[in-house]
Length: 410
Image (cartoon, rainbow, N blue to C red; front, side, top):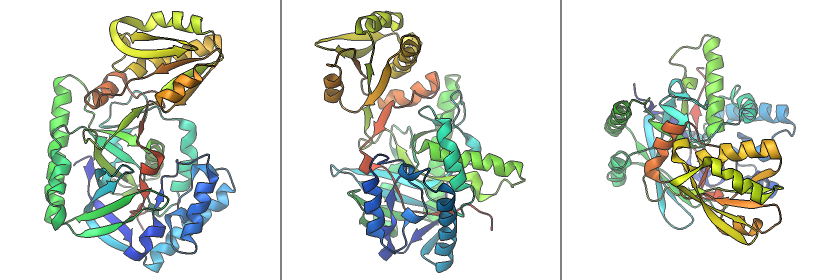
């Protein structure tokens, strides 16, 4: 059985879609006006904003909000708002802010193959450290839900691009499911149905990818890493937690909650952009911090630029301590701050980090881009990456809640 597979999907009828699809719940957490505008646009029309819970609003009348979400899901199902697509995938083309098109395929993963712990050796793993405190609120939302919506973006490492190319080549023959402009500047999204013989053919492509990837890792003596969670890991961790609870209650192996909806993307696609997140350390003695860095440096190692006031230089981090620079730097900074005090923040953009480092008692560390060819290998070698290692595109380019899937056995 493949780890990534087809499922039955529910998609609102076309006239509902522009007001239905809303961005991932973990975006715009400090901008309540964004979510207010979403609700105002939806008005009284059916919308995913009524069956999801933005993190910006967690903690505000949570119990009543979750009860309303569950009741609204049941009402939407009873009202017949959805088109039903059994045993399918959905091929997605998303136009990004710069006009490029990011491709993906919506399917489900087997949660039995996923582990979000730091030392996981499962076929599906988190890319960054999971903050366990963020899981319980998501569990409370999911455990009584009849529908699943997903903003999870799952990455595969397919250098030849053959998996998604097989759908791109047939795009004109695939039935359109949706084609519309996403609200609040999210760009255009087009979804096409992969069903019948196309489901079988694409499933065979997936099976071949999983088999070949597993064989490659086995040849290196490592547990296969088939897929890495690029975005939405805490929601996926909540799905895993709920499934483990259902198993203890006697749920069978064919229960729909054993699986979780994701959009599969290829890390090697040129439209798949990874931007490093830099570190700014404040409230420290810059000279002491930089001298202490000698403990993690080695000639010819990973290059990381530093800035402190008007001074700057280059560290070469010891590759024996980690396959990726961030896996060497972040643990060291955590230890230093624990011992000497100070604070750390995570910054998008080199210019911003350098400017912040001009303040007294501050040091900026500029991390290089992560090579796509090293990404899976780095996780396999070092385990999950430190939190805030990379960003996948801009906030508006995150996945929107759109397709639904039943996760109860009723």
